[in-house]
Image (cartoon, rainbow, N blue to C red; front, side, top):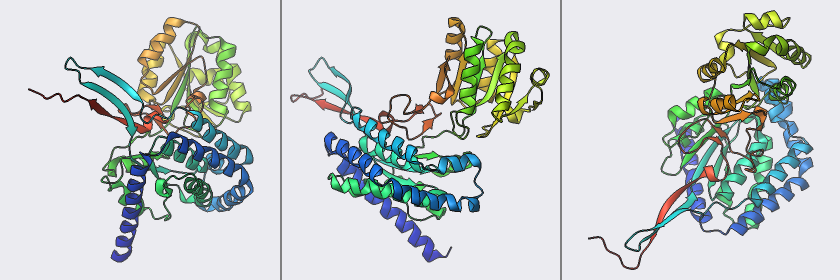
Length: 424
């Protein structure tokens, strides 16, 4: 890239970020009802424009072969009338949630009469980077604006037509409800260098949230000058305990793995207590194979499941996002916990057991953003948790962990009320 083009690109990024900062200042003063009206208008506009959205999405699908996308990535890219309706419903659900801005988190009155309130406030400007998920355009915009934040959206080039069609609908609805149009901006250049420029603009951007492959997230974490909310991968486990209801365990295992492969909360690893392995594994292995799932297991697994291949450490660490699962037989609950904490990604891990003590021990000892007891890993999701949607699932421990909804996109400040007190 020539020096002049590089300078122009950086100036474009600065202009976008500065406009977002100005919009965030205006958003801090709008009413909750304005944000609700915008969400409902946007939902209805999505429904009115289904044909246009499908046509724009088809342009992206037609070009998908040129990007060497996996089947899972193409599935994430695809918009259908049902998925568009789900997006519209999510916007309405977010509209119905309490507005977090202005919430008094805590308050106290000091002995001198000073009233101190801890009040929830927006973060400011969110730079959101994502791949192959056009529905996330609407989810992210909705969550950011409802929580009082301006958002800069940087979608992947493979979804450019879909993202633009969705963003145009949302931006038009902003103006129609008196909200600043620059509260939502979609980066209009596919140039990868633009990301680097935005990551330097900490004077305008409050936080960056990357949602995509591990290489993208590691790049953002390395280059960003502002805080980053992230998760690198989703190696989620299902552990079948010695005291599990095996019929229920089989159903939960199949759902966790097979309900949808290309998502971060799908199970990638199955652990089975040795005491129930002989009874459990042959049947569940057969069901997995009928679903087209490749099984990679340890020596005991290969004895019990015909056709299972040998699993290596890399398989136990992997986020496959595909019909592949690693399977391991463990001698105890403690061994299962050690395996998960060693090989897992701190995302979502489940235990199937009727033993309350085992469930409690697992919940305390497994170091993950979400622990599921007798239920599918697929429930670690903003919509399923009642958040309306999520802008991502964080495996960090500072500021936000798990599905990031409205409250996770806020901070707080202290507001103090006095009657002339002075400090002596």
